[in-house]
Image (cartoon, rainbow, N blue to C red):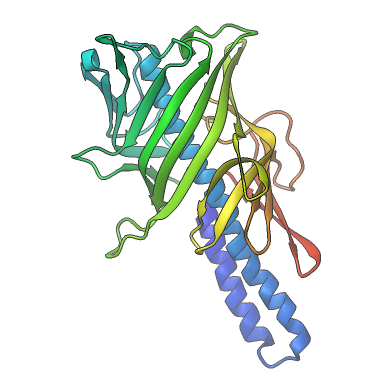
Length: 318
């Protein structure tokens, strides 16, 4: 069962609880609110995972083609016809390597030109600007096979190579360090009559390392907002709340294995600024314990509800 199907199930459960207790005394109100609250909290916690995962993958695709003139992307065509003026476009049309997602739309990648020459991405300090969507495509869209839902991202990001060379040239013990500054929006209801967009901003440091044949990406927040430290993302969630996400422990992803890519192996974040701040712990078992080997089940979301700790384990979506 997909995550959003489970959330829908929770909504039905909430309705049944209300009907069951509607004629009972007032003390039952806490039970009803707690059930409803878990639905809202799950939505916020899971969106924080989903939007960051999908943005990370789009950004990493850009770095991949910037670093290697022969690189290919599963389910996409890389257009290098304007590479001499610093423009590369990725046109997505199909399924990824593991078959769990289908991507459509385009990303346009622009590199600066200095002295008549394009500045190579492998040069420390080099930058590239990504635009999610082009004049012919309204955005970058991901369709999930597990529940036939989709999310669409639009906006732009500036990537900066702050240390290291090309992604494909990393050797054990070395790294590529990338700074991300992004202003994007997302929607889950892009097939509706009225499209509702939710703004998100990202300030992150992403470090790529190699161990054996495994390439890992470790991400942490890179700014402070309203007293919150190590903030990596902020904006407006689907419930209309302003939020700030602080990184407590950097998020680690294995980006070289198709069935693991972008679902975090470990890491911990706190979503602040909302009524009941949520702590997301990534890479857990179905019971919520840390999973140190194999493929993690999902994430553990915890928060304080009416003075007591509440929690829910959410499975990863692929």
